[in-house]
Picture 1 (tube, rainbow, N blue to C red):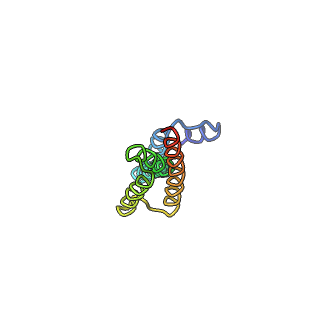
Picture 2 (cartoon, rainbow, N blue to C red):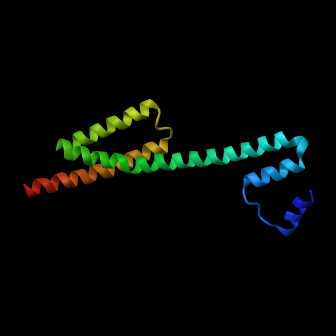
Picture 3 (spheres, rainbow, N blue to C red):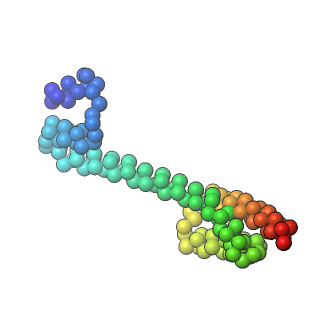
Length: 132
């Protein structure tokens, strides 16, 4: 117990969660399992929040860039920007139907990306017609 008060009095930071777990486990031996469970749960919660944040960032960044890129790519392959837009909208509709799009904001970001991609595909088609 003196060691814990010594660390608190000197305000020495603890190294990691395992050091805190072992220190609390030694001083609170009767409640050792409860403390380990609590610290393990907190550690799991922090990691799961980090994973959720990373997944959300990945979803929104993908929604921002991929639909526009797909419209331009399909335009290059099919030589028709309207067909490319229809194909991309069909793919997005399939992903919404399967449940991968879970918020209205994600649909708005997809629509924005489609609009920007269609704009660039239209410019590309006009430039190709001028050159030929």
